[in-house]
Amino acid sequence: MNYARFLTATSAARKPSPIRIWTEILSRAPKSVISLATGSPNPNTFPFKTAVITTKQGNTIQFDEEVMKRALQYSPSAGIPELLSWLKQLQVKLHNPPTIHYPSSQGQMDICVTSGSQEGLCKVFEMIINRGDNILLNEPAYSGTLQALLPLGCNIINVPSDGCGIIPDSLKEVLSRWKPEDSKNPQKNTPKCLYTVPNGNNPTGNSLTSDRKKEIYELARKYDFLIIEDDPYYFLQFNKPWTPSFLSMDVDGRVIRADSFSKILSSGLRIGFITGPKPLVERIVLHTQVSTLQTSTFTQLLVAQLLHQWGEEGFLAHVDRVIDFYRNQKDAILAAADKWLSGLAEWHVPTAGMFLWIKVKGIYDVKKMIEEKAIKKEIFFISGSDFYIDSSTPSPYLRASFSLASPEQMDTAFQRLAQLIKESL
Ligand SMILES: Cc1ncc(COP(=O)(O)O)c(C=O)c1O
Image (cartoon, rainbow, N blue to C red; front, side, top):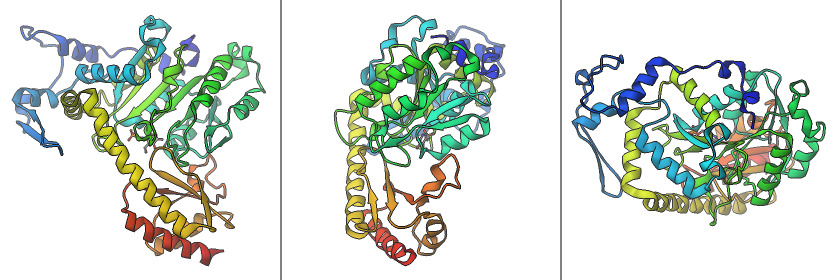
């Protein structure tokens, strides 16, 4: 892989921040070292002393005075070592990336912690996308991604998808306007990357099958583009075995994977992580060195201590409990949809995530109905057009989330929605 060809001028120009390097050295230095080097504030002046956090299982995570001082201090930009090592082991267990033992320059797997996966994705986009670059994604798409991409002035090419995600033949057709060797010629502007949410896609709830992923990966090799695998719903797959990730197939080091703890540990702690080839992860860390400096040390320590207490087995047992919750919620929303919306709307059964993507029959664009009338009936949904590159695109779809409402509330919501559809027809 020639990683240099993917970088924007801004990203390529990034150099390590000298004071951040010192933070890193200091974090590994023995206690005997006398440091007058960094500008770290003296934690003895901070108002917080200790913390005890109780988990729902009744265990405690204790920050004594020493740990608290560390929690309140600057830390390395890539993440604290004990969290990084835990995450690395997890990725090896779950994805066994072929790149794990590659030489660094040839795309060895690397990881960095980010303040939620969104922050990591935003930095990935800034790293590789120039104005006018061609980018592939499947519409409808997560609006957080669209709103990050659109200001960058790239040309977003929609790749048709269905209930099983991106259709490889359609991708082939999109790519057929180029020849594989065009990727060597910058003038040809071949697509730099394909972005997709492979499990429980937001908003459609659709998941890519393993066979499709293999075909898409082969096309990425042929036309030499990167794959950005945004997978916050990976841990919310309802059926086992979980579908193999793009990362698990990545023999070239061309996959940048965004993981999130938002849906399984906490969305407010803001912990996500990027896994990808070292030469690219290094660029993201250089960006962090001059933006957020690091993800909060306090939340990293809290999560690291929890994960070390649980071990991999305990973590996956927790994930299974979360999946059970969302599976029941999914069954409840489907039952409510069957009861009230049959004949009025259509939907696919999601196999992961927290969204039901509903197509209202006989209404060309549901925007007004959702954004004006539904609110009056005290039911909130997101209208489909919000997930399109051109948000003025009329859409008969709406997104219903089954994460927060109780089964009874979902039943009432769909009863009201059914009435609203009938009034709007
Ligand atoms: C597809 C997708 N990507 C990224 C994110 C951002 O997640 P995080 O909380 O990890 O930043 C979300 C959040 O809903 C999402 O749905």
